[in-house]
Length: 355
Image 1 (cartoon, rainbow, N blue to C red):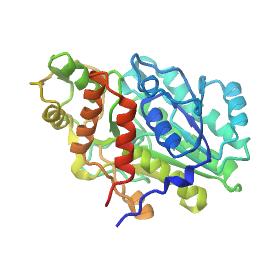
Image 2 (cartoon, helix red, strand yellow):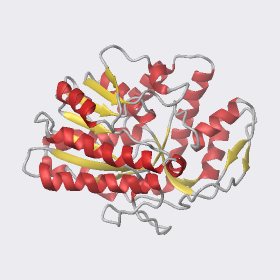
Image 3 (tube, rainbow, N blue to C red):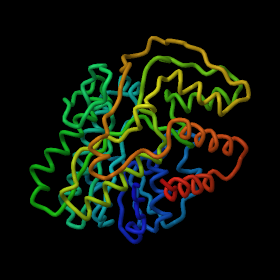
């Protein structure tokens, strides 16, 4: 039996989220606002049209600041004004392919953005708990068959992955240099590939599936044999919220944590697309087209034993349920339905499930 996260903990808590206008950030804002948290978000304007953030129609209770994580002075002003108790750092340039096109911007955002955020934390006494969200791609990838553990070598291959490895090192340095003597808990969360309703990014397999299938076009799959740890966006968000709460109450909980699905849900991209087609139907099909793009890892899996053992945690929705819920949201969106209500129902189902 696994105890559910008591979200009443967040009622009235002052929470600061960087990257709140993104895919993960929008879902996280939804969860926290539903729980009664006092949420301040700092992020660039949404990067796609359409985008999940605008579709959510957030109430005025969300204090949204449009700003660049690279601008320390601006970030500092709003951070000090917010006086947060809990911080979730999600702001990033999150795409491998874009990092090849814009490596300088990627490093500025993902490395110096982390420095700037932690510098704000250093100068704000109200903060008690910080979760820096990185990626499963921080590890030096040997393409081996078993999952990486938190003590493996950090050395991502491409600019995105490497910049996130650097973000991990920056976080470690700030902990050792500035935070160890404070009653302040800082953790990093290394999450796998997330899917869910409202992701409109380019060069991501499920958004590509939705775009193609909705037009009645074949889904183009670049690397059907690549294996990734896919999970629904609510699973890692639940883990971030759990870590942030528990380390707020007990500083010894803080650390580095892998957040991923069970081994059985680490599937090939081809298998993921097959599942998507099963739930989408409408005669959707896919084709294998290698476009000769830049290097991407072929096999990647996480060992989440540390998170499971320390928090008595396990993933909730398997990859089939993750696809089902993503298709459910997408179909509602396509028919001009209430996607915000759909999110509320999925959040309620996820957070109040029976184990």
